[in-house]
Length: 345
Image (cartoon, rainbow, N blue to C red):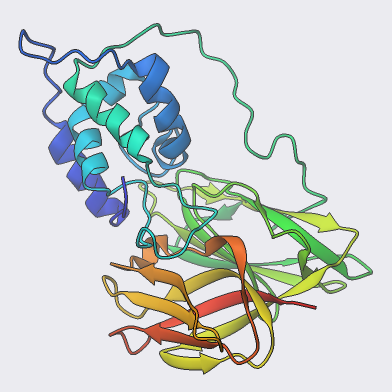
């Protein structure tokens, strides 16, 4: 479950694979003891439900035993080929907070369940599971104030705040109004401060300790939303929640890195990287070299898919002193990387 292709191609792939229902265990089936209820469902809930849950944008739905059995061959194939969850960053080239790829243990569990007889286990009654943001209500919620007809795959919303004073943002939460159609959202504090990129697997996002984004008084927030093309008439009313901090901290800033080398003119702490390429399937690498010649691999995105382009948030901010050089390599002449950073003092 690694890099995801476009929704249409992905659906076609699943339909072709799932058309043959997984066969029942035979005398030659290797029984492993791995069950749906005890081992598999928690992994699918954690790694796949954001896109493949009921009412979400991707197919097949994987929230029941029957659905998982029907899709078992596709699950095994996607896991072994690292097609899902979608993640284009090369393993070991930078460490990221929002990396949702399968661990070796999770991969082994899924494959063992498929090869081991598709055992159901004990199916408990359905229980409510708190959403990731249930315990952290935002300090301010912005929306368009009305339902909007989804008549295009891209739409820009401008959400104006009425706050009389500037505030410091420590985190944000995008809430799609129509989860079956909203594919991606890019959130910018106007004129040009990138707050982040939302995909269905993104939970509430909090900036590193001591870092905050500045929201000017009566500011406007631009939300660029990408939709799956609806089959019938549909509407959306997505919302953006903001979490404030009483302690401003270091201000989040951005620097656009083009192909080639960029020399830092100040000490910075890099917090995230958001690549953009002009052509799908291209790659981009970002490497920093400090004045002492120590090298810091920051990001290597392979097989870029614009439908699932995201912000790669570093597990820990990377400190680069003044004079550090950041090299961006790509065969795509249009490649660029938006680097979010904070000053060090």
